[in-house]
Structures are given as structure tokens and as C-alpha cells.
Length: 247
Image (tube, rainbow, N blue to C red; front, side):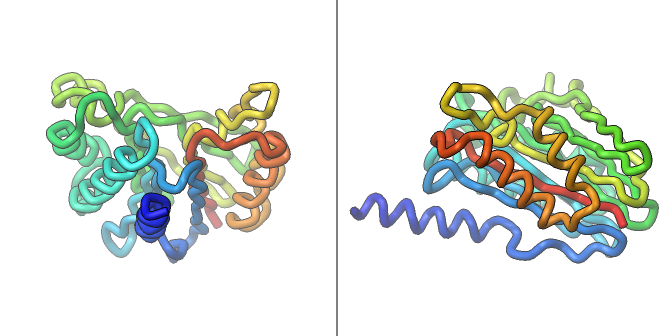
């Protein structure tokens, strides 16, 4: 009983580390959801104000489960918040985060992560990827979707020599009606009783069909669609989703 009580307290603490309310960003609507598989998990997302016109958007997934994953997730969040400063590129932020995490992690674990900076002035997104799932860009004008995955390996695997030369920064110009979707593989790898995976194609279809709705409704549609697919088969991984919509 005591153990389950402590896990419940840990879960409450962890959920409080997630953004309580969506960020208020001129010209954009942004929201996210995290559905842990167990009492505590290793997924997280965050919104980090950098200055009046720029917002950092982060999504991450720590390998493993339970208390160790939750501790590494908390560490990662703290390090990223301390490094997301005015004039540092996403690539440089993740390079610094990797150096810090490498000294703290047991090297059996690692963190995949996407870090993007949204600029409200010129409606652009600049981003780097540390081995994470691709960023999905839904273009409003032609309904097309691009899966963006600039080079980069996961955080905490090696000291930095390989990480620093591998990681790249990309950018994207956004237009009215566009959607940008960050997700963890808990969504795409959700399974039904036949052990079929939900997959990126289904994820893209439900988002495309919902793209005119408010962001909170799009997120709800995705969650409902996944639940309809798995039909009660146990969730084996945390599920995290962040959507940015351009007005």
C-alpha cells in the first residue's frame, strides 16, 4: 500500500511538471496532452517562453519505464529550461543538454527529443531532433503532410563527439491554417489485441480530417481514434502529443 501511495504521489508531482495551461501566443493556437502508461512515465512536453516573440516547444521520451525514466525525464526538463536562452540555436541547446545528461545517466538509458523554436514575428519554426519521431507538417493550402526529421542521435548515449557532428537544425515557414504535430511513439505504436500498430498513417488521417477544428478538439479526436483502434488492449507506452495551429 505504501509503495502504491508513493507512486501515486510521484505521478501527481510528475503531472504538475507538465504545462498546466496552453501558452498564449499571438497568431497561434497550441496545446498538448500526455497519457502515461503506468503511474509514472518517461514522456514529457513543455512550452518555454524565450522572449516576447519566441516560444520553445519540447517533446521528449526517455527509454525505459517507471521511476528511473521519470527521474531522467525530470532532469531533462530542468536542463532544457536552463539552456533555452535568447540567442542559442536548437542545435546548440541540445548539444549542451547532451553533455549534461551524459554525465548523469547510466548509459543504458537515453532520451529522444524534439526541440523547436516558434517565432511569432515571421511565423517560422526552427528545430533540431535528437533521435525522436519526425515532426509532421500539415500544409493547409494543399492538404499535404511532410514528415520532417533532421539528423540527430538520442541524448545521453555518448559524450558529445558524435552527437555534436550529427545534429542538424532545420526551419520551416508556416502559413495560415497549417498544423505542426509533435508526438511520441506511444501513439503510433499503440497496439490492438492482434498486435497491429496504430501507425503514422492513421495518425495523419485523423489529424487531416480534423484540421479545421480547434487544437483541443483535434487532440481529442486522435485520442478517441486510438482508443477505438486498441479496443481496450492494455497501453504499453506513454502517449504524448503536441499540436501547433497557425491562424
